[in-house]
Image 1 (tube, rainbow, N blue to C red):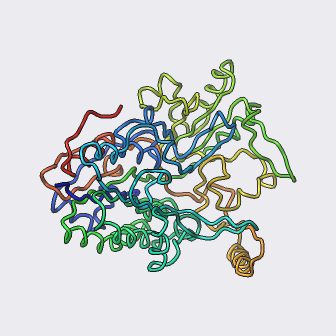
Image 2: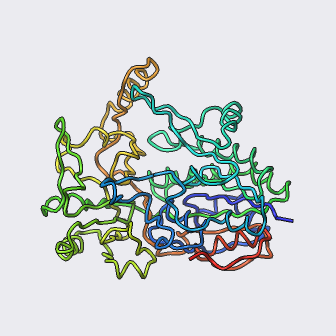
Length: 461
């Protein structure tokens, strides 16, 4: 018989934070705890794809949370189609040995289009008049009304943005509790630690409170697993380190005459088609795309001279890190400890595009952790936010322009490989028979198959 398995991706969980999470520590008390290696970049989409395929980014192709789609001439982050992940997923491997092996995916990334049996993933409603309403996408379709009828609408505005909170993790955990009894493998993504660790830093009182909150919310689910005989794996993609230095790669490239913009209605937009070089910033890693090989040395020199840059990896150096995929930049930058890369490309804030002041994860050509803040420098920001919400309730068009254009407020970041295992990712497992001291991210697929009672085939690499 197949052993039922629950895999919890508790984002940002580290050995150091486990001190404040008794329910999670109890998993290791029943079984074991291991240091977990990660991949470069240590960001959600790349690491999750490695967990599920057993492959490095060079093979599964997820070189970050987004990249420059050369065939489209556009930068896209947070795409959702599972076909972007190259290689066989763990459930495909399992079904070769156990036809009918069933899988529930609750909010792991690249969920849409995956051949899992149950799927739940955030999916806003984009109204024709420009409004955005919280909602989720499910498979089968009837699952949507089943979950929202009991749990309410998916709390999208508590999942990311200035109002991100424990409410989104609570909803996800409750949805997982409903699906776990039906599935052989249940995957659940629990995002809460991402928020206050980036807002206030990983060693702040708020970080301790966040760890306690997520542990409390997970308690009933872990009790369910214990009562139902479900083996539990809790792991993290990365640890979050202190942040103090935003690094503006695109501004440096623009000042060097390598990055171009175009202007509409007084706002500047990145022009990747015309730029000789530009960066797709993703936490502590940035892919730099260089159009003409003749410019490569000049771009490399410019990047190496930029304060806050630790490594500049060309294609040959990327091979050492398993990142040498065609989607990667001609150069990949890794930030110093405490530094992180902004996507900002404008030189004056009055030229910033209007989406820069909002939560617009699909329009910004790079990751923006400032989206976690109501602009601390604006004394009227809460009043403006309230006015915008009133417009929304009245069905009027509005722009939630409350995000700061300054990265100085960010206190936590990730993406580079960890320098201290105590602040790196961790794996907990309730089955003592599988115990080991450390695993690589590429070992997680095989661990899941072993725990499920399915023989481990040759890795798909």
